[in-house]
Length: 255
Image (cartoon, rainbow, N blue to C red):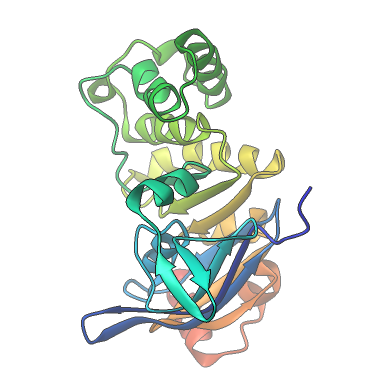
């Protein structure tokens, strides 16, 4: 087993035009850990998450996943961006769950889950179906395998989206505010699935407004504001006793 951390980001800078969204972000997440990113809208949390799997290219710094430089090849001191095909190969090991569920509406739940393993990883259909049914059972939706997404609640669709990401057997899961589009009464069922994943040892980075989840499940907490990490540490300590005035102000509004 590799001794590398699962994610190591060093001095990440990201600009959109002249607007610097990420300013010198450094984060380390060890394998098997759950890291939670919190902070106001527009603080750069989702952008940082998208940089990890190279959905966004970076303007400065270095980012490694499981010891591999993401999205770039280094020659001497220079970085050269990989081809889309090479990046896709790297990305196949990283699951991502978005706010919107992004399920294919014309495919059943089962078809949605087996699509990527059969097409991208050339898994035989029979094996993909067997895995998909196990995953659906894990998220409590085995009875919905033949249903189309339009007939599911938002919480059920998000649980299918998690099962679909897991079908690729990722070593890292990224969650971008996975419950923010859900009605309040549906949030718990998605968080329960994520807690189960954490207990099974999955490395996870979660952008979330669910402070209770961060406190209960997180191994580390990063508070971001204005494109920088203002404060980080053990979630229970940071939430109970924030040191920085910006963290205090944010938490006073959400707790």
